[in-house]
Length: 99
Figure 1 (cartoon, one colour):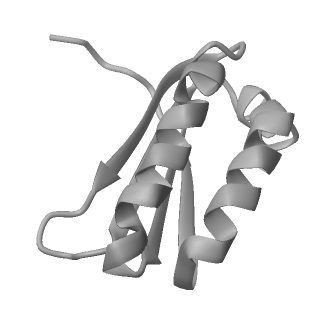
Figure 2 (figure 1 turned 180 degrees about the vertical axis):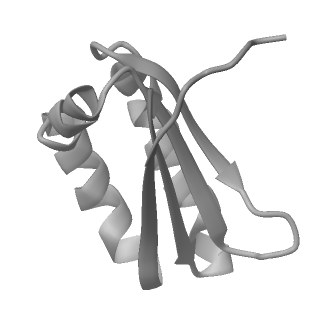
C-alpha cells in the first residue's frame, strides 16, 4: 500500500473554502483506480491547518492521480489559499489487519 500525507496551512478565514474544494473533488478521487482512502481533515487547535490523507494500492496509482485533471483542478483552487510551505510525506506500508 502507498500512503501520502499532505499538510498545509491557509488563513483561518480560508479554511472552509479549502475544505469545500477538497470535498468537491473527493468523489472523483475516491473512484480512481487504486484509491483506498482520501480524507481532508482539520488539525485540532491549529486554525487554518489542513491534512490530506491518501491510501492507494500502489505508488503508480498515486502517480496517476497526481497526473490527473482532478489533481490539477484541486491545485488551481487550493494554491491561492495556501500560506507557508506545504509538507508531503509518502510511505509504503503493509496492512496488518482491519479491526
